Length: 85
Image (cartoon, rainbow, N blue to C red; front, side, top):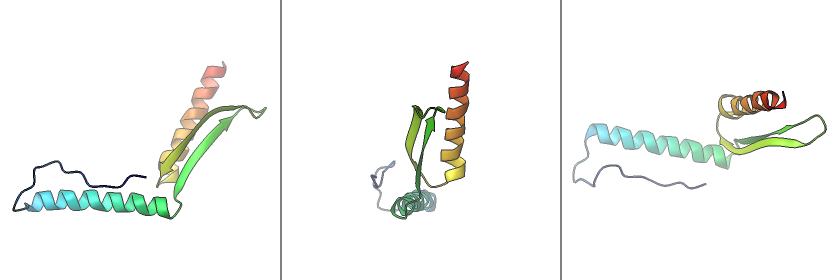
């Protein structure tokens, strides 16, 4: 996992309160994602046919299992069912 800072504005001698809040929010999001990575809060899925043949998979979901990974897996299963018709 890559973790770094991005600068969207040129460096300034003074930092406005709005810019400070924006940078602080970005840092908090990055630290949260890195914490999820370090604590093993990482997920993936495999969609298989009844005979065990793998038809889809995706890994690298970090953070919220139900909001990201599970939803993507459900969409993959729905897509696989549509493709089987």
